[in-house]
Image 1: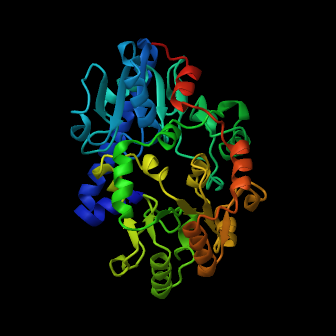
Image 2 (image 1 turned 60 degrees about the horizontal axis):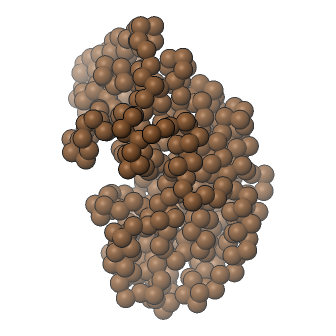
Image 3 (image 1 turned 180 degrees about the horizontal axis):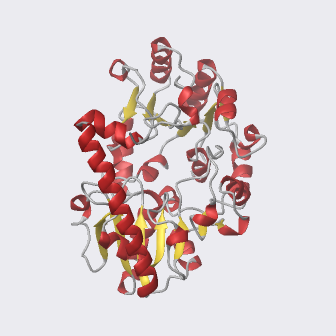
Length: 415
């Protein structure tokens, strides 16, 4: 029997014979795909004006921000933009095919690269993604540019050994301090990191009308809105070092939630909880809480609002070791860091800084009393760590009026 997680998954659903057939079919398809990649590498020429974007989830985050900028600023009169997505039908109506073409990331049944996707990836000069590419840089053609727009620089160290040289030509980071940490994170040289910020930072700087309307809607009659965005711990996938950390930060039982709900009521605060997309749902009955609301992962999509636009309007952030705490420095509003599992996280995952607490400019929360004090300060308009935030922002983030423009210029895109 093959020692394969997918085999176990398929056999439990469909039976052992079907599982073996699927695994065999996938092996055959991958062999054919590998041969096709090799053939295209030798026989095709690069399209200097073709750009491929991908992200997780589909059409989101830094890739979407930069893609939309290129489209809105007229770059598509010269460049063709391709988007790799899982659900083409969901996006195909958004633009004309001559401007932006959405193509399936993988085949419907086997979940392997389609021939069309391979051809686009092997003939486009620019491959830009927020996560790992389906065809690694080492398999690409000479002259291609593999750019990791990535999805954030926080405090967490890498959970496994990887070699960035096999994955990308360049990777974006918020500012100079992260070039060094990411070089170690990716086991490659610092000159492969562009400290020019992320495309999504433009959303933080210029939230739109719909985001403002949604903010007012969620705030209701409350005075302030605080968003809580913890990084993942116990997740929906295996082999994550953090999976042994199962407790929600700070909150030990339902009584703690009820206490904080009362604190929010007393201080006229709406507390929004946005879990990480891969986080397992906690066993918490949020329906009994009147001032604390959990936000589903597709909440902002349904309201046609970019999450980063909305975040910019909130009155404070609670996070921990996540990249959102770094990004929020642009907003320049109070931040609180939950640190009750700091030692566990240090042992399980580790940090990119030798002294990470020195790079966390805000309230350090170890219990619900600390959380209560932070919420009181938000309500009173007390900003105790503004100067420390500014010092960290100067160190961590390149300041710019338009991050997308800077990135387009850096990559040499022309109209």
